[in-house]
Image (cartoon, rainbow over all chains, first blue to last red; front, side, top):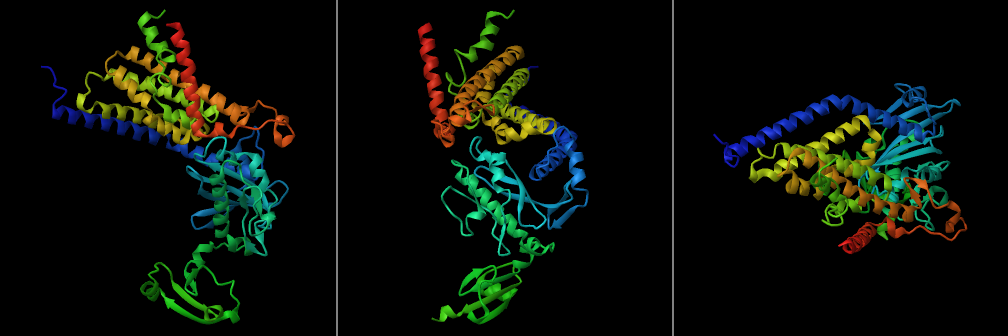
Length: 275
Length: 208
């Protein structure tokens, strides 16, 4: 009997068999190789951290070198993120902060190593998923990363980060707080700038005082509304400017402003408003 | 060593029947990976391996495939192979896998693959299909390498990352030379592919 390969039932069974075989095969391969892949990922992360710390591991095993610098447990936990505490040969302590952001085509990330003062950049390492080769992908090259070294991230004890700007432009914090962007890669450069700012501000409290508290864990519980404009803090107001403050609870805030997920909403009215 | 027909199957796609410049297939990925020579080379090799393997598998099961769902079966075979290769690379050549990143997944959408499976592997024996896949993959790789060679040399002054045009020539260092930024744009890849087609046609027409 010749099989009718065009019958519905044959087609149905054929597809089921094909899909099951492929699924089993891929699941099997994935399971077998998972350990190796995870090890590779771990090793890649360690290499990147060593890169940020400017440690040359040449022909040594990078994993061994890494363990010598950052022992197990030499990390500070910030929510899901970790800050690595590195002890280099010259007995100085460096703090390595993880970075994650968006480039032009996909995610970008990296590690930023700070000196013991939690202010001066010791070294930085970037990686990317799919930035344009020859343009945005240049962020991984030392030529670009080198520019960050020695820069300070805090001005008057406030984290201002380091901006990546086109030649000729100046950021608000002044020329000392910026580096030149990669020409032709505007969006990737902006992505790096934004990534640094957002990630560093998350550790603002830690950088200033050494306390292990993630910035958004406490700051975002309270929303300030100054003259109808929502802001994250009211440090910029001097006490005698303020005429009236009202505190709303979570429920009232939701009813009045439609804002969810906050513990309190503080409404502030200042003098200028009256004028 | 090889019969006339198998020779034609293997070598035809390299020149007279090139998938990129004659059949105009796989242009989209040719634009994406040709800014530098290295990703172009790796992409060329990856596509060659996957076309050859997919051709063999589809050719082996060609008589059992229900006609109405053949495209889906081909797609499943290609997708499975690409996933397999990507998993293996991640485990044994992590650096290469990172270098290829999204392009590896994009091989699934490469028209050359579906084109060869549908046009050749569905009606030919496994060995011929293997040669056909090899030839077409290499034909694709050649064009990629030519385009990437020009783009990297004039766009960045390097080849495979090594500096070819001396630093002292550059205007920034007091020289007279400036990289051609246009080379780094995808549009330039299209123009270069056009030039390759032009040269290719005029040579082949003369032969006739």
